[in-house]
Image (tube, rainbow, N blue to C red):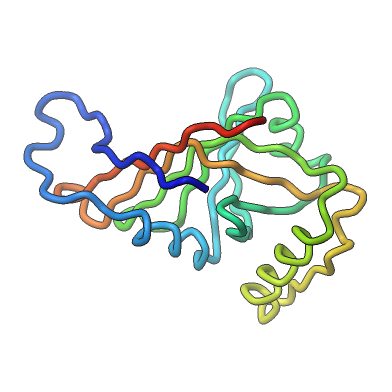
Length: 167
């Protein structure tokens, strides 16, 4: 992934008086990798949001999660790939905005990395997938377009923007 553009998120006048610093990407992506629980928001066909907690992994600058293509969020993503993903903390915030897609026949080298990351994070909780588990589908990939993050809202709200790569 190329280095993101780093800016201050836009706020209405009077909303945020004098932020003092910007976060560095190196302060944010490890939190995406280390988080245990993620909140995934997709959009229903009628435009209403759908939010669900997911286990996920950060591999090669993307977020991967798995599950049945028949779930509400998977069906939403099939119709509208725009998603948001939020870590659990409401005070040390990381929000990912991006596009999501199911990987129907994922590359073996990629699934080896994803399975290893899942096992490292979740084996103690009873989940240790094998790399061939997703050969018939059920693996989803989120490509970040923007990440909003802060550790202290009044001091360091930061926006990281990623130019979309070839599709």
